[in-house]
Length: 183
Image (cartoon, rainbow, N blue to C red; front, side, top):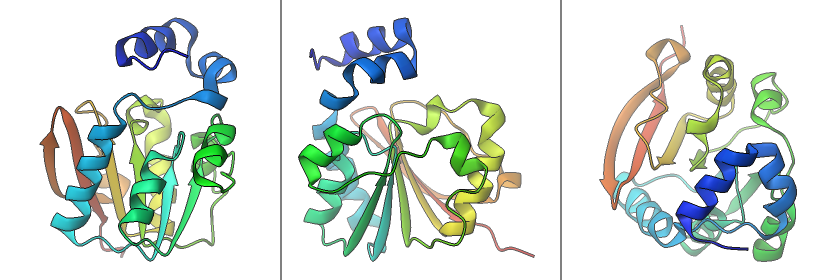
């Protein structure tokens, strides 16, 4: 499979997410992995992130999981509805196959994570699902790190999260959100 970023983006736009990953999910590799690695290292160092029990949301082929392991994460769970084979091949662990809509509906209720990392995926969510998804994520963690090649999504305060800080490295934006105090 061609791992050139532009070729992947065009194929993704042409086929749509489900068809793209049905064809290429088992061999998927993020072409921006080197930047993701550097951004994640900087974020963990800069913000002293709690890596006790992390969730790699939309885990792809495990780019985030591998870096978090390197940085001392104690436990990491991966979730991705499309790339389970690629994730298992690189990390040696199984990813759960929930999609964003299932998470928005509460499938992760009762869990607790010290940190959720969503890399190169949160901007793909249909905006109508964002409020429910973010509410549910706020129920299972107080910290959300979004890595994105875009300014999207822009989280709204009424969704339960406040921007703590952000930085940009080689056009990849890292945003750290904290849950707002619940009434």
